[in-house]
View 1 (tube, rainbow, N blue to C red):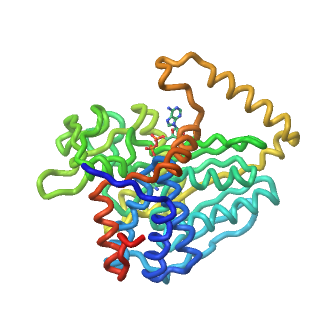
View 2: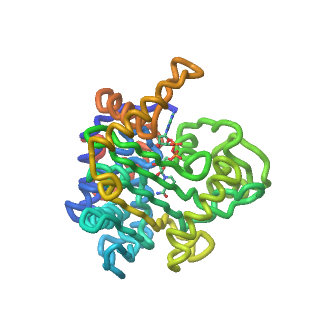
Length: 355
Ligand code: NAD
């Protein structure tokens, strides 16, 4: 399917205006635009501006409201537990992580649990926020409010969400390590991008509603034409095990929305469990931390590549490279995704083409 290149600044202004027109504050709109456009710039189109029409559908269906505000349940260092009240996810999670960052800077560690937020986007975003403040972070997230979409290892049907996890390690004076991925072999949003582009996905990522391997991404989206299939977990039993842990840690232990509970509406609910640590409490000498981390990274990156065109990378390298490329060339959006954005903008009296 055809695509067009969009200037990041234009998409940012459009998203910000759409979110304000829909009733959220300037600050909430700014955070949402920052997050979504940075996801596209990082190469994660599955979690970029193409999510906005889904959020607006949630709004139109009465499942997401600008009036929703998070409520703090526990604020007693090192614990921060917030009821997300299904508020708009990007500002909701950013607020929780910012507060946890302040807590960890003060006391050395913070344990944050944001319960029942609307979709919070790219989890690496929050690891980057913590790393920019000089902090190590670990995040586990569940995906509820939707039918299960990832099969447990050895199963013919789904029991999990795509339950992402992210880990960030800052490098003093350098680029942080940011490891961030879904526990499915492919993020559900990437299957949506493939579907919108009319492309197949590689073999080994999806099974159909009968449990048979398929490369057609349509099988992981509800349709009257076929029963819902499933994404497969990454790393067989390893990814499946991590997905199960993410579900229990982020939501299950606290009674937040779980994949096997609550009515299914047009929304995605995320709960996030995070541990944020000040590395200076472990090794106070920042220069030593930098040298130790960089010498190891240099050792890893120096491994002979299988294919010289595909160099050995550390977590976070790829996103930084794509950011530079897309900042210069623009963000590619397929026509289907763009037409969904245009339609959502029109509902709020905005002409997306004029940005
Ligand atoms: P992915 O498969 O693209 O993996 C990304 C990670 O792998 C990054 O840390 C990246 O730096 C690293 N990486 C990529 N190529 C590499 C290479 N060649 N060498 C070394 N490291 C490399 O990610 P994904 O599973 O498709 O997830 C995409 C995004 O979707 C993530 O940001 C995730 O947080 C998000 N997500 C969100 C939800 C939600 O409900 N909010 C659910 C699932 C996924």
